[in-house]
Length: 106
Image (cartoon, rainbow, N blue to C red; front, top):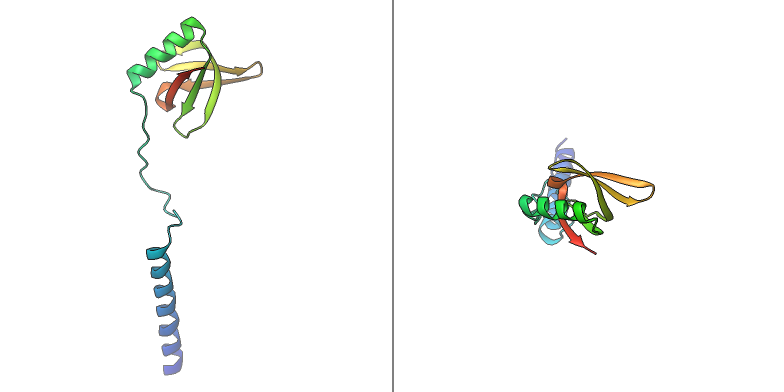
């Protein structure tokens, strides 16, 4: 019985020391709940850029908060913060300004 307890103690110590070694020496970026600081254009600036792009039919690139980028034109304004964005003749996206990181002219 003592041999079995010693073996279990040895095994748990080995696992703990190995886990501590990995945590202290390697960065696997396993923690998914990290608070990422995403720089976003101020909402008033996004509203202005979107409205001007919509009214003047500018081609723009929008970058979403998840770093997805779409190239196209704003073709319809649903309300002050929501637009229909035409990416190509077959693909449209409804975008909300609070989900956009930036708007850039092409």
